[in-house]
Amino acid sequence: MYAALWRILPGPAWLRVLVLVAAAAVVVYGLFTFVFPWVSTLLNPDEISVQ
Image (tube, rainbow, N blue to C red):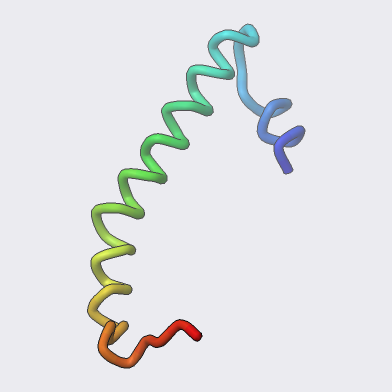
């Protein structure tokens, strides 16, 4: 999977790394902005117990 991403990206290695880091930052931002708040509404912390 990662090798396929590396092969399809154009440019020199430093540009590929920059594009992959930017894509990872966008994914993390999307998770913290949209996915994690949505999931937290589905979970009820009063029902969670650790034994």
